[in-house]
Image (cartoon, rainbow, N blue to C red; front, side, top):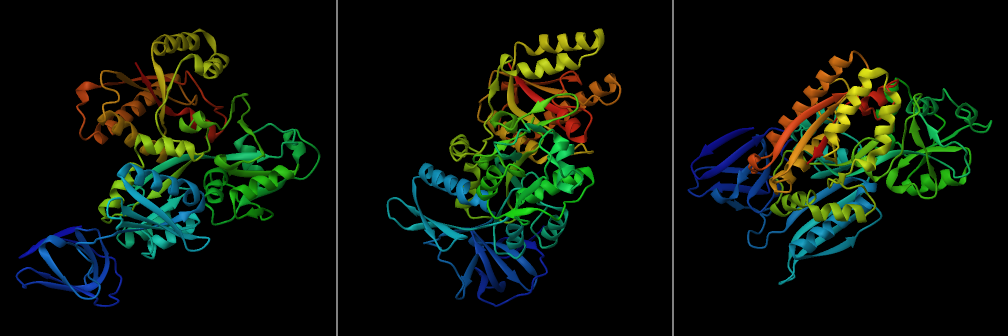
Amino acid sequence: MKQFCAAGLAALFLFVTGASVRADDVTLRSQDGAIELSGTLLGFDGQFYRVQTQYGELTVDGSGVLCEGPGCPSLTDFVAELSISGSSTIGEVLMPALVEGFALQAGIKAERITQDETHFEYVLSSADRNTPVGRFRFRVSSTDEGFADLLADEADLVMALREIRRGELALAAEVGLGQLDDVNRSRVLALDALTVIVSPNNPVAAISVSDLARILSGEIDNWRTLGGVDAPISIHLRDKQSGIAQAVEDRVLRQAGLALVEDVTRHPTNSGLADAVARDQLALGVASYSEISNSKPLALTGTCGFQLRANRLTIKTEDYPLTAPMFLYVPARRLPKLAREFLSYTRSGPAQIITRRAGFVDQAPEEITLNAQGDRFANAIRVAEGEADLAALKHMVDTLSPLRRLSTSFRFETGVARLDAQSRSNVQQLAHAIEAGVYDGRHLVLVGFSDGEGPAEGNLRIAQQRAQAVKQAIEAAVETADLSQVQLSIDAFGEAMPMACDDTSWGRQVNRRVEVWVR
């Protein structure tokens, strides 16, 4: 980004997009008439004009210029415009609930107007004069379509059920939308999970992630392999454009180095998928946790006997290995003030309550007592070997007994030191809570854990390094709080409390984590 200063122009920021000028429908002229700029008006947020010119896309401070031409907006009756496109799972229930909650808190009215099956808008109006102050337009389709709309300059925000892919990242950066995987370019609205479902009449109760990948690739095609009946497995997934289906390929098959089998029954909706699986005793599907209907969810297991089930707490802590954050991607462009206020609202306490009521898993931290974590400690005792392991386990229990675990956890992307998407959002959520004074006078301990691969001393050292990295990320994210009011420290116990079996990459990923404990 380059900034140019000239007589009468308060600020001018240049974003080169490479797009050609379509029509000269506005002219921006400095107060003294010395400088003028013509182009197509792309947006106005009440303060800044966004114009496509022969120089590329420019953002100009409106306080220093006069606007002339048929495309000029009204400065007195400004209506904030926001276009949102993407996942129907997010757009049909969660986002409308959040918009209506935001309007209620802001003291404005929200009227929903439906155009067709995939398009609707909210007209936000002042309660006193009943005049429009904002229009939030929605197109609900799929994660793929949302990113396509953003790249075509037909959407301001993208609703996504998966992380942005490398090709989409490169295209977004190329057209001047910024690095969309940066912490400020994406936010987690709510949490969901990829849940393996079967018919309630199916005797199988658990499955390993490795076996799931082998089923989806066709290597396992009979229920007898999983302890069920001698019959073929029928695979059900969402449509190819769905973020849920794409997350299955990205996170289950690709990690196993496998490809999806061609013989798959596809469904356009989550409810249709879950209902079809519930009716078919030979069916297996991967569905959204929020919409499993009458089907039976399977626990995830491994050779060591650990089992993990998708529930609100295991999804929130990311202990369940197939947690699926629900993203809102925000490009590097200035949005209207009303839109920015709405984005801030999505991270507030009231928004988390609305998220829960809408049937999704919220991100509000919860305190978990030691007694409520009996399974975790029982598993740790079961895998302990020798006096050294038992001594380390006793030290951990003695240290953590006076504290409570927060549901906020941190995990890292596979093979790198970077926090994963949900954890980057958790940093912002925890920093916001610290800024709000939620933890004033309390002691937060960031506790590092590792998998069991390699020497115990090395694993302990790595766990300490991860805890320190999270501490630094939180301190960097806290902008306005006085950190002297909160005690923030680190500890580590290495491989002392595994959450899953270490015999797979998924199990090791779950075990490598930093937990937050509070006194």
